Amino acid sequence: MMPTPLDPPIADFAPSEARLTDYDRSHLPTYMRLLDAASEGAPWEEVARIVLGLDPALEPDRARRAHETHLARARWLTEHGYRELLRSPR
Image (tube, rainbow, N blue to C red; front, side):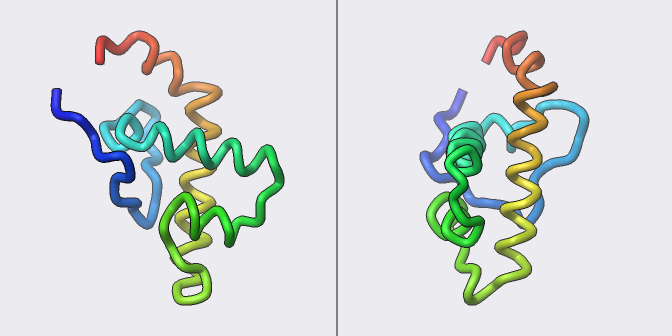
């Protein structure tokens, strides 16, 4: 298995499949950071800039979309996707 980069590139949209994807696996640290930021009440613009590496001042629609879809995916993982992650040999 190849190691994943510490900060893998962020897609404009997080996956929406009802299964865990390779993208999800490589972005688990990102998802955890998003969940932490949300629980702290951090402004989405700050989170998009720091966690996702997107500038909401330059690309407001892209940054908001990426933030919303990745946070939703992170929440999905806490409710559903974690089961598959725990069963996975990787």
